[in-house]
Image (cartoon, rainbow, N blue to C red):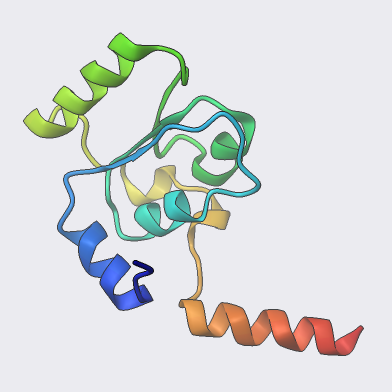
Length: 111
């Protein structure tokens, strides 16, 4: 079931953290959305996630099972917390989804 943006936002706000294990991503929109909402993020140690999150996430090798388990336990106990807003990179400060779509369509119409 696909969820609306307000539903996704509500789910993220109620979460202890975002787990984002991945081997390859084009961008990582869920990571950006979670960072915008100050949700602690644990994600794969891949280049694109470093570009999106800077120092504002916890990075783990996607094949490190014990590392992921420790991170989950850290989220549950509060030892992995949201990072200071100053830790974020600019790409994490997204516009609301409807505005992103309008801007994207306007850009395409200019071409």
